[in-house]
Length: 478
Image (spheres, rainbow, N blue to C red):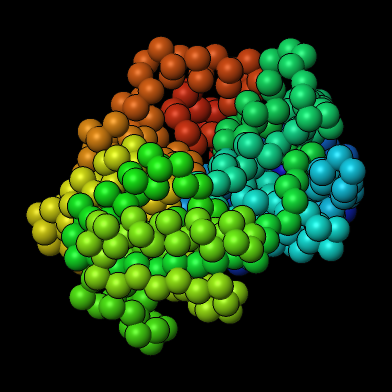
């Protein structure tokens, strides 16, 4: 550094140890952004890796005293830029807090730190016959803290719901370093405001989650899987509607459009039907005859809608192969160029209209757009493929991104179903929720973080922290 080490850096090093405070720009650059590669990102002045709640308290107390912004971060699997760094700020990386503190089978709950990987929690509770349902596609490396901060969903939401549905209680370090414990271990509890869920989906703007008490479910039974292809989006949408109205509750109901089918087939050589307009993949984990009957009923709905191909299997390995094809949709599209991944949820009755609308946007903007999504709950992930080095393509890609958000809202949907607002949809939040709701958001933010230190510039705009360069004292450092 060309200037004297800032006082707050010394205080952090004294509190956490030098090994937990990273300052080398070549190292800190690796923590500058999440998987939303084109979302704006700054450069952290320091990356701090706490090992305990006490460490997080120390960080927030130092940050509060010196007016240094803090950006909480998990594994960096996010797709909206929510954990992207802010110039001159502290990036607080929670991955070292990775302990499963308790599994209580009699109460069907687990207590975990935020750095626990989603799959690691699943594996930890499987041994006692329990199940943690939320399963983002990155479940094998995303962390529970990140899932909580963005209220992640996943493939099984149609039956099991999203992250917030499993939150019993949280421990949160507030902007001033105070520790808030909210929620409960009981199945029911209505004492006071539901503060735990206030922090779920807040994207690190209200506090730093340091512990979570999570509800568990009995382990699912051996699944039965279905795959069906369709020549039209109308047929696909009809099946989704009929699933809802007939009372079927599959554990999974996913859709891929033709662009995704072909991309996955190119990548995996999976012998998929490249001529199909859409592919539906469904599972039932009801077990035994109940699962077989549920999938048989769903297969009948597909045939009645005019499916070109319907296949069912009770072989878990074959089912896993079909799910692998679904989970590989986004990596397959990445082979076609850089990607802008959207995250729009629409009413299930409007899925066909949304797929057709995305096709029209692709033609209008002269771009490749593949759509994959959770048909069972209407959460779609249109992915725009383009060459970022081509200024014209880049401009058209951003325009298509906005077109898709506009399409989703016009169909009665929302701008994000599970990835969050982050840094890339700030301008769209007010359009969806309106000025009164935005005022309430700001009032809550001001009450909990009056100096605006936590993840500034994310979710919505407010008065920014003044002159970060002067606050950090690290201008010109190298």
